[in-house]
Structure formats: structure tokens, C-alpha cells
Length: 300
Image (cartoon, rainbow, N blue to C red; front, side, top):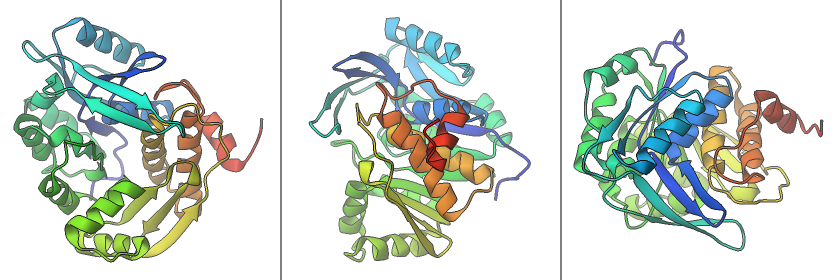
């Protein structure tokens, strides 16, 4: 168990550009989580890799402008900066075409990463960034440190590997996934067909203390230390849901640090996800107070 005296969170994985109908937006789930953690007052660092190209330089500039350190974001002289074509459906749900290969596929193990890992309380990592051997190796090296390991399952066809997911589940203390991803895990691992029973089996089989299943505008359910909690979400005029799950996860991590539990924790995470879904892009500006007010049901 990671030391409770540490507060820093290390996020590792893809940095990329989302090409949305409204323009180009800097993203990647781990970077979005890192941004939202910092917005919520939790110091967070980002480990990734960008290309030595125009989009890479602009990504670094914007990351620095968001007061996120680029000390652990490497530059690749050959591979291009990550790029994703995103189409938004009628209900606001995104569909992704992820260009491959990308610079974030080639994150290298470096002494500086080990240093920041030793100083951190938690590691946020996903499944998508493990699609290539190089980044997969660097991410798994970080598993060996005394960190709370937080797995954000991101199944983005065709970049899906059941063994990568299983290996990640084995080390995860906390898991966040959506309903479709849970159904995929049920098929892969022959879990109980009932979603709640399946989550209970996952928690027992992989010894996870907390599992959250998000359901978009319908809110989320959470299984924490043997107890179930649910929240129906907040009414929202969804502009696009890109980044909403990342804000949810960041608020979940923030709430855990603040010793929120059960319904209070889930309500807070849902408030962050709902707030972002009402905005354009994955990383709108806001304050911790904005999320707290929404979580309390205030219209201030």
C-alpha cells in the first residue's frame, strides 16, 4: 500500500490530438485525468511521448500552459505525435479511429520515471497505451513501485488484448470501466452474466478494493470493500462525452485522497463527469468549487 503521506499522482500513457467536429483538442485519457487531477487540487505528473513535429511541440506548449510539467514527456525523433479521428453520435457518444503507430507507443524506461514513481502516491494507467511492446514494458516497470495502482480500462477496437487486460487487473487496486467494457470482460473471463455479480467476481478474483462501472448520463455504480453504491447521475445537456470518464476518474481519486467514501465519493465523481459532458472538449476550465456545488445539488 502506498504511503498516505504522499499526494502526487503519476499518470502514464497516451498524449494525442482528438480531431472533433469542433476542431483539434489535445487529449488522451491519461493526460485528461492528469489535467483534471490538477484542476481538483491534486498534484499530478504526466509520463508519455510525443513526436518531434508541429503537433508535438504544440502539445508540449499547451501542457505547460495548463501548469502540468513536461519533464516526463519524451520526444521521439521518428514516430509522429498521436492523432485520433473522433466522430460524435446522436447521443453524444464518441467513436474513435486511433492512428498507429504513434510516439506514445514508444515510451522508454528512464531513471527519471523511477524517481517520480518513488515520490508518488498513485499510478493511473490504462490498457490502450500497452498496445505496443515498448510502452507496455515501461508501464509495467512502474507496477513494481509502492503505489496505489488505478486501472482505467479503455477498450478501443482494434486495440484490444484480453491478456493485457488480465495482467493489468492482477496489479490494480482500483478499476474504472464502462458498461460495454464490463460486458466484454464477462465474455472473456466467463464471469456471471449479471453485471453486479460479475463485478463481485472481478473484485474477488483480482483482489481489487474498488470497482466503478460508468453508464454515461445514467450515472455509475461502485463496489467498494464488499458494499454496493449507485448514483443516477446529474441531468445534463450533453455537448460531447469526450473526457467525461476521465474527469470522473480524477474526481474519484481526489475523493479517495480526501477520505470520501461510498455514496459521497460516487456523487462527487459523477458530478465531475457530468460537468465535463456539458462542455466542449475533454479539458474545460473549472474550479474544485464548481464540482462541489454540483455534487451538493446547488445551482449557485
